[in-house]
Image (cartoon, rainbow, N blue to C red; front, side, top):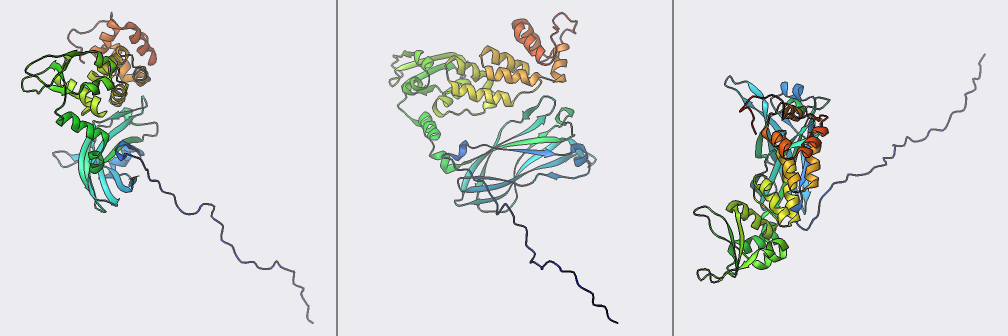
Length: 385
């Protein structure tokens, strides 16, 4: 006997459909600007579990990153290498931090000047500690070859470790194509400063033997600074037939006035990190706000526990509120600075306490202390700046 088994109806089979992707393709970024040299790329590289990472590796490399502007694309990475001691073993502190060009894609080959600066994050006060700016000239052409551009030696201390024991390294990168520089207004003004023979003003300053007289155009001085224009005096000297005016800045060194004049003509300063602390008072005295901003930016990037007191005094003296606030913020939650104040470790803090007690108290309050150390016992001759 056969049983007819009734089959239950089933849903008709449908073709399997691939899930529809909501995002299609990729997006890349390229910057287009009138002058590429004004662009500064900033990259932050976080090395996780820093001490464990470097302990088990002979080298550490960052991911490759891309910098693209005005049709030229460059590829870079940051690498960490180690010095070796006399016994051949690697030394993990200080580190050697290297900048490498890993490739280039460009429509036009040629030379370019590359300016770069490394920094390391101070997690205790939430501030970047920056190295001096370096500069090299490269031939940029279509290539995938690795090229080491430069390196810096970085010491990593406990304050550089964040709560996750990570260390962050920062890179600022600026690429200045030679042709662009040649035809820029800044370079045209630099040529006017260095070669023009129609200058009608001599600048008097404290010069050493062998330093050439500084001559400028009075119309540029008048255009850039009303305060400097007011200092122009008539000059009648038979030995200087083309000179109509003199500008008395004899209280200042020749090298400093050279940089002041360079800024007046080109909006730039060579070795700003060397001259910023002396140029800042000049910029405020002669009402050059662009130079003030440049000096403030340079000093802000150079802040360390050992120089913050000097920079704070300078900012207050020059009434640079932005720099003053930044320096006070830098002092917050810093045990190293707090210790320096309490034990009188640096002369600058003692000077501040004597000549500007209000500023000293404000700084103390920023890191949770208002005590004075003027009356505290100390060891004669033990202060260092």
